[in-house]
Length: 329
Length: 186
Image: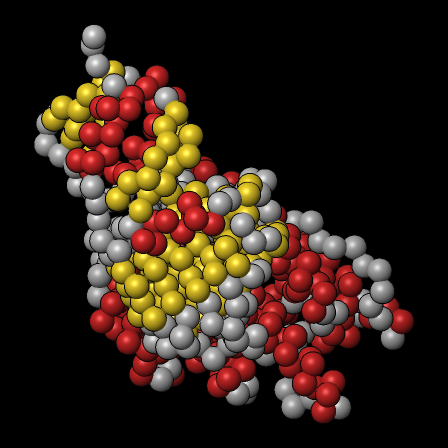
């Protein structure tokens, strides 16, 4: 009896193998489960190692049907058919679809997605769109943005695949509103905030209320109104910066506002709205500081301002490319 | 089984994975006798937690997803069996297996070879370690049952299982490196 009594201060496992052995134990409790997830999220290496060990363990379970027979025993080849019959029809359909995805790709869309209620919203380059969600929350989608909205009983989930959104969240304490982007997520109660996805990095800007940003590397971090917080593809958080609400919200009205910002940043911001991409003739031009307010769809107006204010000349440089250079005087 | 971290799936592939797994996960959880709402809650929460790992290859996501869900299922059942002062199921023994993907006919040969390598590796484990691991994995005995059967502590069972897993992993990775015919999943 005494031998199987769990000691109150057990050590936490430190390897993937020891974690799996712990999780299979009757002594494993909810706090072990939390510690396990913390360990998993600590590094992609931990998660990968764990997945490998778990798969190995599952594979070893498949030896059961071969029951000590020779390696090439026919029992193993028969197993798929037998196992498939046991499952209900929709599930075997789903597995078949999963395999199709793994091998050929494509067909899963038809087989599976109708079972998950979601709506997808996309905007074209240069387009903006206002969306009102079933609970009254509102989204503003910026140019070239793709989001998927899934409303479930206990979550309102918005997955940002690319672009930028502003969310004005209807308060519902029992159903958190969560925007996921990259490895991280932003959880809100009733609030107005923005999430922007830019070449793998994510920037969160809070205008009103409270949000909690969660990434595997940075863990959770609460933002105060008029702060922005960025994280990289690995989830590493930068320190929060303060923002101006007027400037932060300007894009939702189709205006782009710059206050002493790098020309390189202005150019990349404008390029998000246009097929005609601006390029700089020399990288050093990128460090010029510029200020001004422009309509996002008015590239001609921008070029005129850059010529007059900063002496920059624009000329076509191939299909859909406009090169900016310092004027020769 | 080796995962290649270099192969980063697109966000779209990740979203597809979530959409695809959701109904399968819910019906998997319901088999353990919980309500549809509880199964939905666990599935939602587990899928949400998985976004932390969205840059991992899809092959690695599934074991993580199911383990996270199984842990949540066990937490839920532990809470409800405490609340009702009874246990309808053995909450430990019957919530283990992750549904395996059925190999396609063209994969059967590879699958057989992989199993043969696992079997060979199991045969190389130290006797006690192998016995404990197989009692758990093949005979489906819980740690407590094994402890009783072998006259050792539950803690010792856990140690043997951990040791078995790490030896198997080492043996199989050595085999994979030295084998010409074996190649990891593309």
